[in-house]
Length: 113
Length: 112
Image (cartoon, rainbow over all chains, first blue to last red; front, side, top):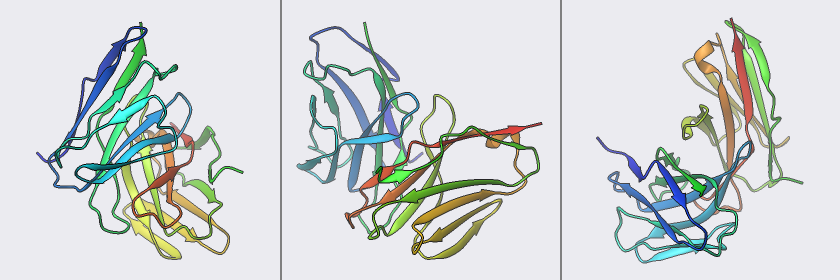
């Protein structure tokens, strides 16, 4: 089935540790996105990429890093510089044609140990 | 002023009634508008999108867009308990292809 796969579903981070969240899509979408959602809040954009080997910062990029080496994959690293990483992380993708809707993976819930 | 605003709710409607969810936005250049449904603990799923002024219907759902007044709404007819969820409004601002700004969502409760 075509879709967006995020792993793991739950992740725990120790103080000072970097963790990487996986996002893979087989929809042949050019654009991929990472959002963060805090309880009772909307989605905030962390990073996005519209083409392989290129990505842009979103509204809250500090403490995060990404790579886009393959069209299908857009991993997000939450670094130790991100002081409040506990949140629900959502990956999305869409076709790079104007107005195409974004579709989401199932999300990764990150907590601090 | 927030770019995309929604009443957080909860909005409570009885089963079978029409639920009306509203969203206002600040950027007059916004061109596309999306409604997502999010069940508790789950990821958002696309319900509808609308680009032109007026109404767009899909089954029990109708999206309404009024660019002059800068609001977009979602009507859910014959509301069912399974419609109980948070509804997120998302707007394409600044003309940047695909870059969306989300509202904080309206929680809908459909009562028996």
